[in-house]
Length: 243
Image (cartoon, rainbow, N blue to C red; front, side, top):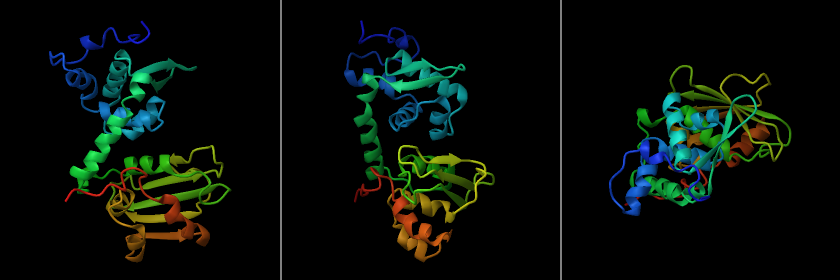
């Protein structure tokens, strides 16, 4: 009973292929639009609805709700109510077992379907959210540090972001969409396409800095530390494109 808890009604909500093949059964759950991206966010540590939505910014609230409900019905995640009427979404054993599949999709895509970073692929909010979750807290200095990113080539209203690092190792770096109310210590002016390419491993930040496509200003020690702190995507940046 435990293995099937919460799974009894998902087939009534999902398209079925009508095959006994395990690939088809997995596809019924995994291959709906947006579902792999929702799972990616959960596997990267997002728990609350708003956190998941920030990692999948183009999905509607209604559709995200539907996808989470279907994943819960399939036994891939649990929905745990929290005080105040919210909920935490967490992977079950079945959900965690999907992690190698999601990682493999990313690796395959980086090798064989690598983005050309056209305008429709560039999303400053997603880029900053992805960068933020891999940053090492306290990596710039041990006291609170505010880094302001100012993007050229980004849509109006989506061209300024702030990272707040409290310098506490076990406290994640915070991403703000409005000024956080603290003095800025470091400014990063970057072409959106360039910073995306740097993050995904398509070019080194040293070249972008030398050519002025990324510029740093503010505390000199922070300017020196920033390239190593930023780094690049820890999994996908090292994948070479297919010949």
